[in-house]
Image 1 (cartoon, rainbow, N blue to C red):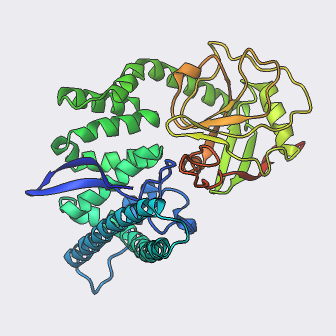
Image 2 (cartoon, helix red, strand yellow):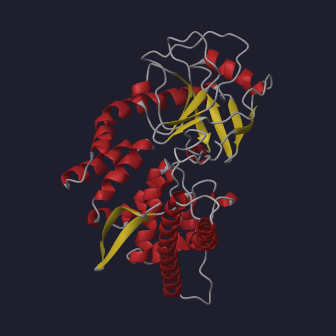
Image 3 (spheres, rainbow, N blue to C red):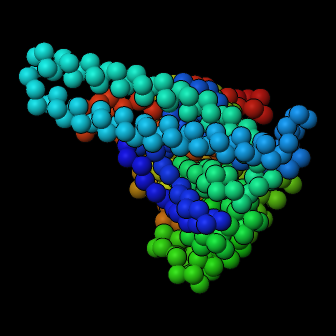
Amino acid sequence: MPAQNVGSGHENGEMHTVRKIETLSENGGFLIPGAEECPFCAVFPDMEKIFAKDALPDIPPNIQPRQLVDAFCKTCGVIDEMLTEMEVFSAEIRARETRLSELTAGSPEAEAVRAEVAQIRQKMTQYAQQVHLLYHQTLEWIGVVWSLEPERPEVLRYILFLFSSAVDSDQYESAYVLSRELMAQKVCEREPFLYEMAGISAFMVGKFDVARLCFEEAQKRDVQTASSKVCQELIPYYVQAWKTEQTIRQQELANGELPRVIIETTKGTVEIELFENSAPNTVAAFLQLVKDGAYDGKRFSAVVSGLFARTEPVAVNTPFERDPAGPDARKHFRGSVVWAQTETEEQGNGQFFVMFTPAPQLDGKYTVFGRVTKGMDVVSSFRRTGPEVSETGKETAPPDRILSARVLNRPGY
């Protein structure tokens, strides 16, 4: 995959560029080279923890702060060099594969080219493993280094890489943390295109006042695009919707604990709170399905960036009366859990989906019956799904799936 620039600018007279190469996989998930089998890379790193001021790792007593920053920047340089080499390897592989398609299968020349491809792939694997190791080493110290010398080009480029990766992979909680850091250091003033990304991140996590200010700054600097204009226009709607939602949640809290479900997935644990007061029939049906093990082993068969992660159908053996999804029903926010059944369908098929983003176009059409309270980073890390076989004929990796689901606080289930 060729490198792409998602943002660039100048810092202390030096050019820096946010690069995307082999780091955001084609299926939309966050992926560092060599991280395919790493359990720590299954989910995007939690930026709230990494940048927590009271949790930053201590600098070893035999190392000066400037030495740490210099070592970090040197390591970043090594990573950049290796990624550049990996681009060259990728180009060489593509060229040889094109040549292979022109040769007679099994011919001596074809076999020689095939052997060259294997050698280059082996080098790619070795480089990827090294980049993966260096990534973990730098990630451990980025919070400290950023607090020491945020103006260093290598440090800023690293932060911008994390920021753009978080936005692109629907990891908006982490993106919002990074946007706060960038604005605190006045980077957005020097790189105004970041205001739009910061505004989108704030909008997605319900920080509508912050989103409004960021969009206004982007607008003033003439760097606003159509996507953020849509978010900006929706702010009045969502300010009122969020106010209503908070009032409902306070009432629910006063009425007692709502049912909760723990879902273990191939990416990690997700906890869901169910709105039994707002959607009692749907919640009861969902709890029964969980109790019956209907979701165990089921895949997230439709995971669409910027929209949702949806399960595959399950057998619903007991008919139930669907809760209406009218104008007064709960709205679709990031993390909303939604029953995949419209007003025109007599009976749902047990599918539900979790929203990556607010979706006003779905309000009044689908029943929101819960919300993710823990593990939204896990949901956002689900593999983006497509056809079982890509256009090139190469098999795609299997979708993420539910390993098990259980009800936490309802003895009858």
